[in-house]
Each structure stands twice: as C-alpha cells, then as structure tokens.
Length: 247
Image (spheres, rainbow, N blue to C red):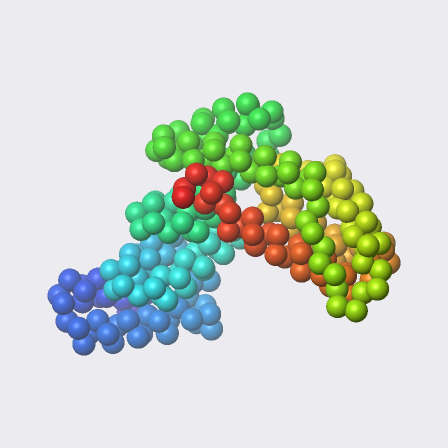
C-alpha cells in the first residue's frame, strides 16, 4: 500500500465514522511522519495538503503542528512550491505556514532581479497574476514593502547585545558590536533587501567566522552575539504573518 492509498483510507475511515479504525490509523500515521521514517522529507505538496486536512478533521493539533513544521522547512529549502501551502494555510488559518509560504513566493517571484521598488511591485503583479488570487497578490506586495522597511530599521539599529556572564568589559563589547553590525549591514549585498532571512543567515555565518569580532568581544559576549543572530532570525520568521498583513 502506498502512502497516498493510506491517506485515502484515513479519509474513508473518517467519513465512515468507525472510531476504532480511526484511532488505529491515527496511531499509524503519527508513527509514519516521525523524522526517522524519512516520509515528510520526501513528501509532495499534495501529500502535505492531504495530511494537513486530515489533521484538522481528526482534530489532532500535534499532527497538524508536525506536518506544518516540515512543510515550512521543505518550502524554505526550495524543495516545494509555496502555492499549495498558501491555499492550505488560508483554508485552515495556519498563520505561520502562510507567512513562510508567502515569503518564499515573494523571493521566488523576484529571483534574479534587482530593480527599483516600483519595478519590483510590477514584477510581483505580472509574475503572480496567473497563479494567485488578487487578494493574495496584495498580501505579497504588502509583504514586500513591510520587509523592505524592516531591513532599513535593522540597518539603523543594531540588536541589543546582552552582557555575557563574567564579561568585565561589556561597554567596549557593545561599542565594537555596534560598529561591526553597521559594517555587516552596509556591505555590498547580492541578496535583495526584502530577503531578510537570507541576509540574516549570511550575517550569522559572518559572526561565527569573524576573527576580528572574536578579538573585539569577550568570549562570553561572543557567545551572546551568536545567540542574538539566531534569536533575531527566529523573531523575523515569527513576524512574517504580520508583514504580509495576514493577522
């Protein structure tokens, strides 16, 4: 039996109302979607969509969360088109999935281009007119402007560097951190401004491998600096539904 056939059996069991069969099938599918099976690492958009529908129908938040996390990961890895996820997220109110999917669609729509903001908006409209509803395209355009503004704010204000436990020269660490932050954000980027997550990922790698920063910060504050980069990227990811005006 293929996984698709199994999902169809779950759908039929739900419709038939057999509680014992539903409970058994749910236990099986919860086992199948564990990381060690590799199932979600190779699942198609259609299978993710089917699984998300089943999780909602079976009223199983843990399954729903697990499926959404893997779906978002696969989309951000560039392995799956975000369009199906946008539809599923809109159908079931999956805000975090929607934010990630719209972000990936935005990056895909403007891949390889570096025009002005106005030209970007025209490109989004032309690129998405066939595959997306007008309201969805509006969400994309809202996200583009909001993410562009968010990057400008990050460019002007470095994130707070907490004092590392045992650091005895924190004021100097803060000054050096601010100076290094400005140097990183104002470098010549090949990544467009709206693609904040990719810029932050690259900056995180720069912080980890920066020999000068390793000398400019105390060892304790250097650990904090790496944590700041991780936390900031996670925060921006959580903010995506807001940027695309989905909340």
